Length: 318
Image (cartoon, rainbow, N blue to C red; front, side):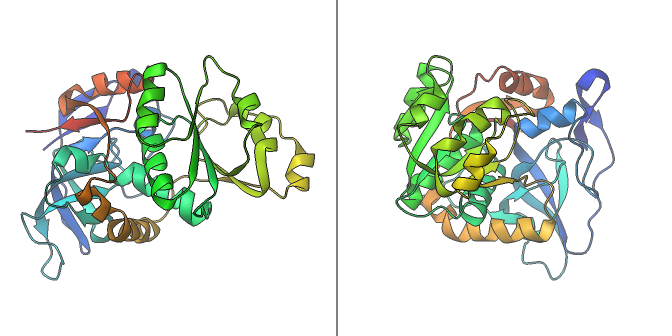
């Protein structure tokens, strides 16, 4: 089979490699599409290696059909599925633990299904399991037009929460308003800190970090939960410790990739049972910005590097 192997200086090379081997408790998926995530860019830059046991090439989610399954597997050859991965999605085939695989609903394309597992699982984990977001509360979502931002906005509105979000352009502001965001802040032309002072936040899903994190903590409601999932805006901040104490704010770091396969499987199962039916009705659905042939993965990474996308970029295979 072929896969995208990371070369010198982060180059992405469509290269012939050995096929995956079926193991007990695993299935092998013939990949038709794979979602692109910012973590893939970090991996290509040598800053985010895959967890032990997963392939060295990028790809945190895929969609395709079951190519091989064990005798006692709940899956059979030909089943249409999507999967959450620790790596290996940028390839023609991948071996995946059975629990990290879910069925693709009728009417959902491989492209849409490939844009689902990573960002919606991340949003569910952090908004509901860690953030304990409740109906009627207010959530602050950084980078609302990203794949994760869109998933978080959709799930928060599905839960009955108010959404405040940041974007980087009028086009992105329009897009997130269409998704139901209640307050949209253009971070390039408006003062995020000052606007947040006009609101009270219960949960923050923050992929930016940086100095803005510390500046905005005072906007949190007492008992608020600030969840940091990435540091795109910088790795350091100044924390107002008195605010943390006075408001008993919980500041938590969270990544999905480093969690065990068993925990990921459990979250994905909950997502499949509660959210996936909404994909069938169309109430929740991935937003696809562009599809690109997998062998041209560098083009997909370039789009994410420039933050041009509204929604997901997906790699496809014939």
